[in-house]
Length: 226
Image (cartoon, rainbow, N blue to C red; front, side):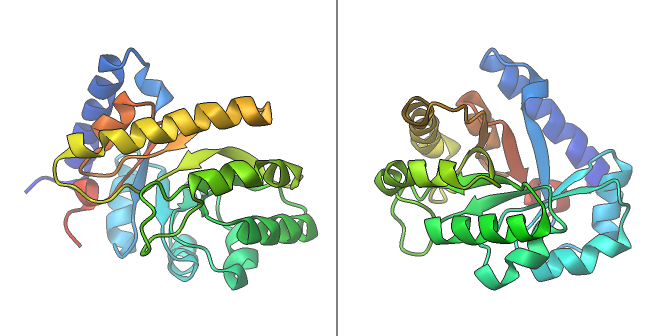
């Protein structure tokens, strides 16, 4: 059985090859290890292998794990953020990938102002209009862009998406293309750069990188099945 260190090394090699196929530098793509539901012992094993960026879905789980691990580790929230968890979340994460509504963005901005923080955020887009998933619809995001840019505490990094699952990664390529093109359109509309694209998971991160992803969220391919 492969160790977590072996898995990380293999994934980094795959990241590099995917970037090179797209004419990009491997250093342009960040690997985020999705540690949700995995114990601190396995996170520590990944950290010992040089992986320092981790993603959690739930604020409570992140808060339970963080004190047990090195302060050198960086944490991103990648799951849905409830408004009543914003205050706790802002004090412990480097970035939030799941700003999925204008109401949540307003709450983050208000609380960040109270705390004296400038959080980095990604705007989550529900490209397939799935009722079971959160996120802005593309047209609503375009309509909300001016207000989002008026929220002066937010450092909007770019966009995030979670396409419908398909075991054949090629079938998700369309969604990654659409997200990149939406990002490009919003940059023109808003007159400000959106340099980051959070897209790609264990089963499709190589395709996502080929289409412009700057940060891939990989869990099971590192830690094994949940």
